[in-house]
Length: 603
Image (cartoon, rainbow, N blue to C red; front, side):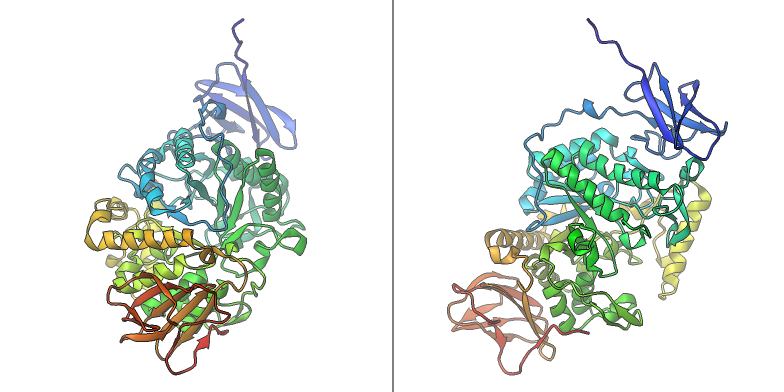
């Protein structure tokens, strides 16, 4: 007998209105209160793709807070999605391990010429050839307009319509798994964007007690917070279960304020672990935080939240300041090789020590944490795009120093992350861009950006306008570059470094103490011992000779002028060498001739 279609049941949590109605096409269906603020109604004609919304107390039609698809943007009606309709081909995929992995951060809109999920699929061969293990997508939840970074998302369950919507994201994840790449998705749970944000009309989604730099904080601990916590945790589980992603990067968790006995991040980690067991697939959570607080990643039995890893911005800051010489803003806290040596060993520079920039003590010791608890980078969307002109590292330092940065990144005991185009020293900037359709909001964003950088001496006319489509266009990668001259040579360097990381277990060893750094501030030299592997860096102005021992073998050299012979390694300025000794030595080998070195000491 033919199957009889069942009515589609719609539910929404809306404790604030006294009346709720379902709007499907031209039909308006009264909803029934189910208790605890939930309303429900059924529609006979609804199926996949049906447009719908909710009216609260007779007001205008609003999108579903849990909308799975917004085909017409944040102001349009929601559309139903049947997640069982997608034909997945990744049944044999069992996830990926974060320890030992190399991540690749990309922005869907600027990564490929098409600027879509499908366009990204067309570039996966490049990533496989590069040797990375997973892509990390900047946020894709529905945000205002056609272009944006994604951190002002509003419909948190709906992949952005301009990128290809739910089916497009599933196709990208499926294609990644087919070629052996994992997928990490950046999600934002500390605030919600302003345009199209109607959550407060439904219920107490936002806190009266807490605020963030971006506006109202999400209500994780006040009246009505049980359902708000459920809203966020269910969202995270949706990405894992229905979209098959392997990990989530949780944006700015220091702005997730929760005074509950069980922090929402701990509850999230517990439920993700339970889902992983059910799916028999590895899943992980990465936190972004500037607090240098090990509790985010310590196990729950040790009083931590049990997240899998944390971004370590200070690793970037120490490398950037040492290589570029910048000392403005938070770079005031960095610049010495001693601090560079310290982050090479433990990821964080400030571990309870005095921070001149903050004018207070900052952080806590990460002692005992494995290297894979930290994600490190020389560039990412923030560190490039939050500069006024969006300059990449290659625009700020010599090609030699850019190669040094790559070597330090890809020989680190942590989880390295490469930002799109970094691997070939892309000449394109990555600037801050938006597409708010509300003229007042767009003007406020543009003026705010100019005002922010005016404090740093920038002329307003020199700060790219986020609302100008040209700002977005300038940020698109140029895919003709990887095959050209200096770009091709940098790409070959990255491929070599990633291949070495695969070939030598010492380079992925995450155990505490697996990296030992020795610096000489006077001579501007640095060595890093990774068991039998030695990384030697010369940031000085003249050739420097390192005593290595006769049995060391050269694995990689960033400069062809580098020479090895008679137990001496001669490295020209702004260059790095990676060597291997046949037998691990108990203490750091390559020490420059003459003066003693300083180890990475506390600031």
